[in-house]
Length: 263
Length: 325
Image (cartoon, rainbow over all chains, first blue to last red; front, side, top):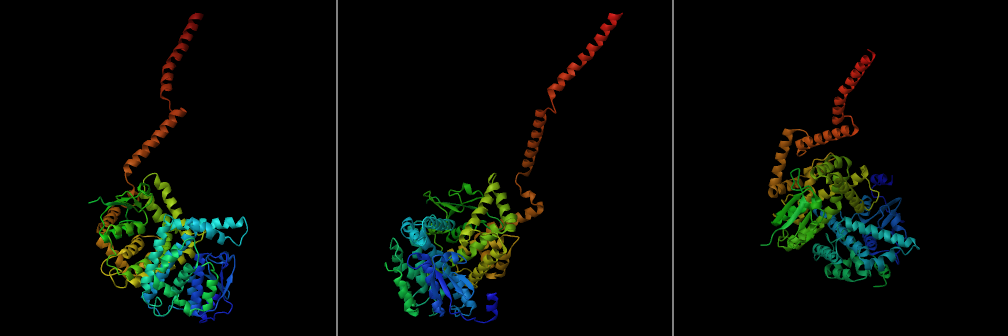
């Protein structure tokens, strides 16, 4: 019902009490979810839409698609960056209106590149690499729960991710090959960015938000090896992309750095 | 010169060199790059070195299965269709390939394997007809289960089932993807310049089956046909790089029309009819003999014994008569 109302009333105002849900910042959230959440937060800030971040241990289960993060706006619940971008567009807020058709095609393609290669690589490193899974992912993922639920949930999630990796053909890859894929993805992004400040038109778009979310999180998260961060650091123009943080509230960046004291 | 690598791939049909997207991608790239490959078109995945198709067996006896791995291998052998691409064009290739894998591939899986009418009428029938006995009984079903599992894992929904809503969502993404590809291609012959690259191979591999295969639920085909530049792109590649396969399908169509009916597609029809009649006859005869309905030797014995019985009675009467008289 709310959607049909939005179609008739142009630019229904963004409510003050919009909330974004994600898992617990200190102990529970993992690299991939953190990256996705930061991307959405960055995007909303770029649009100038205020949102309150709420931390819940069961955020994953509350989400309509099972993925983090999701936003609760009015009486609508939308999860993942793609649908959230469409949702805000329906409300009249968009960052990519100034793009022509070819540019929009490229933007969507590059966003899928990040999802297809970077996000999948993050999931692989978290759950398919035994040392990372044992030392970091499983303990963190199951930290809010007591025994034996924590063991069951952790192994269930690991099994689910490994099955997905097999289904898309990543099951047979070695860690080295995955790092190569990350390098390739970063190289492609670096080529596209060139010497510009943003990917398109001197203005940030959802692609910039997505790339920022992933790169910032990878650089500021401690894993069992620094290989991933090192690979990214070698593409220096992508690092200065983080000058997006200048346009965001310094508080956001500061609060994020606080949540990763181990760096 | 070293022996060429062997490529195992699915057979072709409907005017295509192969019915599988991954095989088409590899075949197209090999043609674009001019790589000499020994082609083995089979319809039995168990005969491939990796158990699945496509599979490339290199002359170091290594087996590669993923299309991206096979293309990387060919590039290392100096068969590089992306040689002339600038760094930015290479980056765009990667991005658009990811776009197709995320948005178009799920719809392809749905339309060929999950949509009930399409699967039963076309896909399962094609695989069952082309696979050898006894694989044709269980392998298509197993492949369908694998594809359903893959779609479930891609969407992150364990309880995914065929349905209107899922179809609408997947087709919407696929239509958007096709529109984006069409916008990027514009009025050019290939995506980058005048010679085809790996991106062209991937686009061809994904779109050609949609374009050529006649499916009962053909919404994707309808939309693709409305995008002229993509349709011309596919037919162009078929004409330029796979002329033989296009001609084969034409002759196949005319011969099947002259014979009429689907039953003539069954190979060795006469022999199978004769064998089944023989088996039936043999079964009936052995049943009759075993239950005793027909017994050849017993009838012979009774025929010999009967006259002596009559004679005994006759002689008995004579003796009685003589006894009295």
